[in-house]
Image 1 (cartoon, chains in turn green, brown):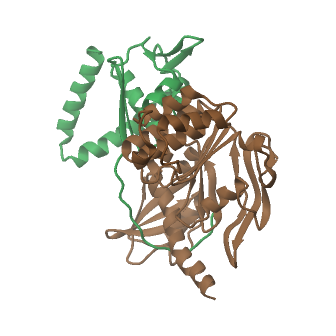
Image 2 (cartoon, rainbow over the protein chains, first blue to last red; image 1 turned 90 degrees about the vertical axis):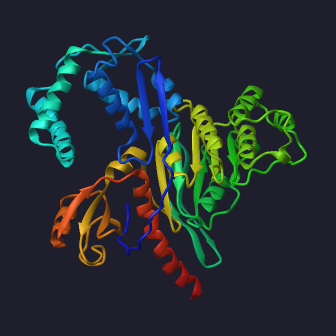
Image 3 (cartoon, rainbow over the protein chains, first blue to last red; image 1 turned 135 degrees about the vertical axis):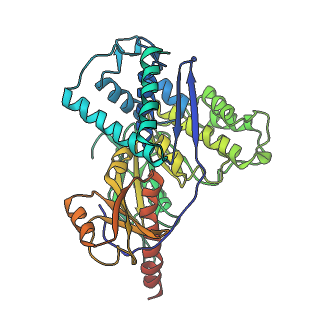
Length: 155
Length: 309
């Protein structure tokens, strides 16, 4: 695909290109190009977060692939790829002829896989939290109050 | 020819005098996709497109478009292809609505609704004089005229050049709407990498007359990786890093961009013996620029030397 070659230095600055779309009053997605996160991953991450926090509840309808692509002005295959991943992970389901909905929560991963994913998330969180110069206790306190809030007052 | 490809070239090559501008191009555009053709000015994009469209004879090699040799396209084949070039030529004395009437008289399958829906996206009124339109609006009228003829394939050579943000958005919306989840095909050359990242399924990167990358946009992203290496001298000049695309200086370290990294890459990086070597995330734009920045140097050195000799 490519050949080895000599090198040069070049840098370039470009303006960010963002777009936000709100559906009803519930689902909101912000796309940033020129991010280190691919667009389909941005959609997956944001929907995952909104479902986890209860902002999107079980049974809530999501826009169709075509509609979301149109609203965000992105390639429909990108949305389809994001939806496919969420569907594979059991977070959303498509009902024949009726559209895409937030699915009932069910365990579709093995314990090992869930632990691996939890460790991944903790890794990222812990690195960021420690870099902000908080003590372990302060971080633990805030995370438990956040968990409290998310599990007891959905929506 | 693969019937699923609307464009397929086979070792397409073009010389201008002694200078090779397009070299052994094996390139395909799958039906229903939006393909972005990227490259610096002078990389050969326009020359390649003109050969694909049958407006320029290849020195050797061949190209098929919609199943026919580009060199003997009939009018009934041309009608199935919408082609717009940079600059957006329009008759200056016409009003926008005259352009619509002109198109209606010219094309057998003209869609008036499509024309007015498109100019509306660009914020253009039918009664406006073409002569007084902004560059972005001229692009809008030109695009409306092209897609209202109901082509199967749209070939756009740098349509976003010099467009304002509103017109760029209108252009993106129009192309996605035209493609309509894979019903029709778009080939677009552009320097607007964030627009390309939004709307394209596939990208091809042309460097000094050759195609170095031709794959799905997501695959491109996942196959390029970068490391930040703390070292006093350029890690690209010593040692051999397999798949090295480019290395450039960023503050006190070097960012090394690599395609298809594997175990050999990792051990090569280790053997550099640098103070530190950390993987870094890069954007789509940075990955593309790694290819283009490398070419700028080889461009000036190689073609310059060749042209002088």
